[in-house]
Length: 224
Image (cartoon, rainbow, N blue to C red; front, side, top):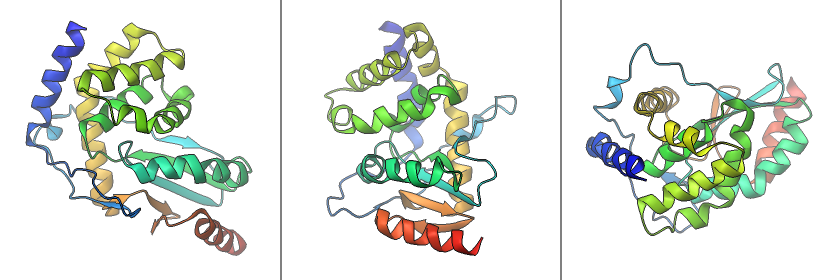
């Protein structure tokens, strides 16, 4: 626990120069945010391992969908609870859609969630993020930073990771800075200003409903 407390202190210092918009929108709309730039993010080592794209489905599918999502975003949690299971069953698993998940960071909790989700690489990533979103209401209402970390670690342990491995992932400062830089580059290039945002075959779309999404996908598939 002492090591994690030390990590949290270092993390708060790293994010001292970053502005995060608080998630206080209750109207069911997408969350708008200002792209946060951190002076520390540019310290990411050029020798650091590249961030792995987390993908599901057929790599040669006629439709590529990139979801930009924030673990702290309630509308992203709703998307993953209500729309994503049908999207996976009806399009991803049938080889019609290549699905890529990219993280957006509103808050330090989102980065901690990424570090946990990516701890085991591709093999368990989507199972872990499914659980993070499923328990969104629990960890976002936790009383302290340490309580949030404890809940994330419990999810990692349930996924079969060991506590020393989880602690090591949470304390990986180089990975943390590389993730932030990767996110900033992606968001700036694709003009991401809200979550969830979907890039479908290179075109940006706001998510409104599963029905509207399926109409769009079916139209694209008919033309492919």
